Amino acid sequence: MNAAVEPDPALGVAFREAVSRGYRNGLDFYVEGFDTAFSSELVILERAPEGGCRVVYSDMGRENLRATGDRVEDVVDEFFHTLSTVAWGRGRGPRPEPRRLDLAEVAPDPRSTTDDAVWAQFRERASRGTAVRPPV
Image (tube, rainbow, N blue to C red; front, side, top):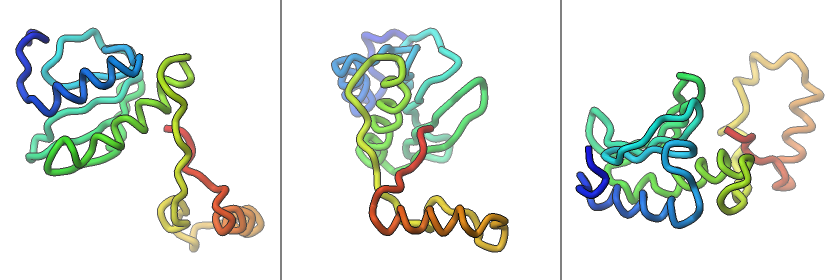
Protein backbone atom coordinates (compact mmCIF):
# COMPACT_ATOMS: atom_id res chain seq x y z
CA MET A 1 0.00 0.00 0.00
CA ASN A 2 1.25 3.49 -0.74
CA ALA A 3 2.07 5.69 2.25
CA ALA A 4 0.49 8.66 0.47
CA VAL A 5 -2.93 6.99 0.70
CA GLU A 6 -3.85 6.59 4.34
CA PRO A 7 -6.23 3.68 4.88
CA ASP A 8 -7.37 5.04 8.24
CA PRO A 9 -6.96 8.69 9.32
CA ALA A 10 -6.47 7.75 13.01
CA LEU A 11 -3.67 5.34 12.11
CA GLY A 12 -2.15 8.10 9.97
CA VAL A 13 -2.08 10.46 12.95
CA ALA A 14 -0.25 7.86 15.06
CA PHE A 15 2.18 7.17 12.19
CA ARG A 16 3.09 10.85 11.74
CA GLU A 17 3.41 11.35 15.51
CA ALA A 18 5.81 8.41 15.80
CA VAL A 19 7.98 9.78 12.97
CA SER A 20 7.93 13.27 14.51
CA ARG A 21 9.21 11.82 17.81
CA GLY A 22 12.24 10.42 16.02
CA TYR A 23 11.20 6.78 15.72
CA ARG A 24 12.14 4.89 12.55
CA ASN A 25 9.40 3.36 10.44
CA GLY A 26 10.22 -0.30 9.90
CA LEU A 27 13.03 -0.39 12.46
CA ASP A 28 11.17 0.67 15.60
CA PHE A 29 7.54 0.45 14.53
CA TYR A 30 5.00 -0.46 11.87
CA VAL A 31 1.57 1.12 11.41
CA GLU A 32 -0.84 -0.83 9.25
CA GLY A 33 -1.23 0.65 5.80
CA PHE A 34 2.19 2.29 5.54
CA ASP A 35 4.97 0.71 3.49
CA THR A 36 7.98 -0.48 5.45
CA ALA A 37 10.73 -3.05 5.65
CA PHE A 38 10.33 -5.03 8.84
CA SER A 39 12.94 -5.24 11.58
CA SER A 40 13.15 -8.38 13.70
CA GLU A 41 12.02 -6.32 16.72
CA LEU A 42 9.35 -3.65 16.47
CA VAL A 43 6.03 -2.39 17.81
CA ILE A 44 2.97 -2.85 15.58
CA LEU A 45 -0.20 -0.73 15.55
CA GLU A 46 -2.89 -2.37 13.44
CA ARG A 47 -6.55 -3.12 13.00
CA ALA A 48 -7.45 -6.29 14.87
CA PRO A 49 -8.97 -9.14 12.84
CA GLU A 50 -11.89 -9.28 15.27
CA GLY A 51 -12.47 -5.52 14.97
CA GLY A 52 -10.99 -2.56 16.75
CA CYS A 53 -7.25 -1.93 17.06
CA ARG A 54 -4.33 -3.60 18.78
CA VAL A 55 -0.71 -2.99 19.72
CA VAL A 56 1.68 -5.93 19.32
CA TYR A 57 5.33 -6.12 20.34
CA SER A 58 7.15 -8.45 17.94
CA ASP A 59 10.65 -9.82 18.52
CA MET A 60 12.19 -12.50 16.29
CA GLY A 61 8.75 -13.69 15.21
CA ARG A 62 7.36 -13.95 18.75
CA GLU A 63 4.41 -11.65 19.25
CA ASN A 64 3.22 -10.19 22.54
CA LEU A 65 -0.19 -8.51 22.54
CA ARG A 66 0.22 -5.25 24.49
CA ALA A 67 -3.21 -3.62 24.12
CA THR A 68 -6.56 -3.89 22.37
CA GLY A 69 -9.35 -1.37 22.01
CA ASP A 70 -12.29 -0.33 19.89
CA ARG A 71 -10.48 2.71 18.48
CA VAL A 72 -6.90 3.79 17.80
CA GLU A 73 -7.28 6.36 20.56
CA ASP A 74 -7.88 3.52 23.04
CA VAL A 75 -4.47 1.92 22.39
CA VAL A 76 -2.22 4.77 21.25
CA ASP A 77 -0.78 5.44 24.74
CA GLU A 78 0.39 1.82 25.01
CA PHE A 79 1.76 2.03 21.45
CA PHE A 80 3.95 5.01 22.34
CA HIS A 81 4.99 3.62 25.74
CA THR A 82 6.11 0.31 24.23
CA LEU A 83 7.70 2.10 21.28
CA SER A 84 9.68 4.42 23.56
CA THR A 85 10.87 1.42 25.59
CA VAL A 86 12.14 -0.35 22.45
CA ALA A 87 13.64 2.69 20.70
CA TRP A 88 15.28 4.25 23.79
CA GLY A 89 17.80 1.42 23.87
CA ARG A 90 18.63 2.26 20.26
CA GLY A 91 19.26 5.92 21.04
CA ARG A 92 16.03 7.23 19.51
CA GLY A 93 13.00 9.02 20.83
CA PRO A 94 12.13 10.26 24.31
CA ARG A 95 12.95 8.28 27.43
CA PRO A 96 10.13 5.90 28.44
CA GLU A 97 8.18 6.81 31.54
CA PRO A 98 8.22 4.19 34.29
CA ARG A 99 4.83 2.83 35.25
CA ARG A 100 3.59 1.86 38.67
CA LEU A 101 1.48 -1.31 38.63
CA ASP A 102 -0.57 -3.20 41.12
CA LEU A 103 1.14 -6.32 42.42
CA ALA A 104 -1.62 -8.48 40.91
CA GLU A 105 -0.75 -7.27 37.41
CA VAL A 106 2.83 -8.56 37.43
CA ALA A 107 3.06 -11.25 40.10
CA PRO A 108 2.48 -14.89 39.19
CA ASP A 109 0.05 -17.09 41.03
CA PRO A 110 1.38 -17.17 44.63
CA ARG A 111 0.84 -20.95 44.74
CA SER A 112 3.64 -21.31 42.16
CA THR A 113 6.10 -19.12 44.08
CA THR A 114 9.12 -21.04 45.30
CA ASP A 115 11.18 -18.22 46.79
CA ASP A 116 9.11 -16.41 49.41
CA ALA A 117 11.93 -14.00 50.24
CA VAL A 118 12.09 -12.70 46.65
CA TRP A 119 8.35 -12.06 46.56
CA ALA A 120 8.45 -10.42 49.97
CA GLN A 121 11.06 -7.99 48.62
CA PHE A 122 8.97 -7.37 45.52
CA ARG A 123 5.85 -6.65 47.59
CA GLU A 124 7.90 -4.25 49.70
CA ARG A 125 9.08 -2.37 46.60
CA ALA A 126 5.56 -2.37 45.16
CA SER A 127 4.17 -0.84 48.35
CA ARG A 128 6.77 1.97 48.08
CA GLY A 129 5.91 2.50 44.41
CA THR A 130 9.39 1.58 43.18
CA ALA A 131 8.44 -1.69 41.43
CA VAL A 132 7.81 -1.06 37.74
CA ARG A 133 6.96 -3.25 34.76
CA PRO A 134 10.13 -4.71 33.28
CA PRO A 135 11.05 -3.62 29.73
CA VAL A 136 9.29 -5.41 26.92
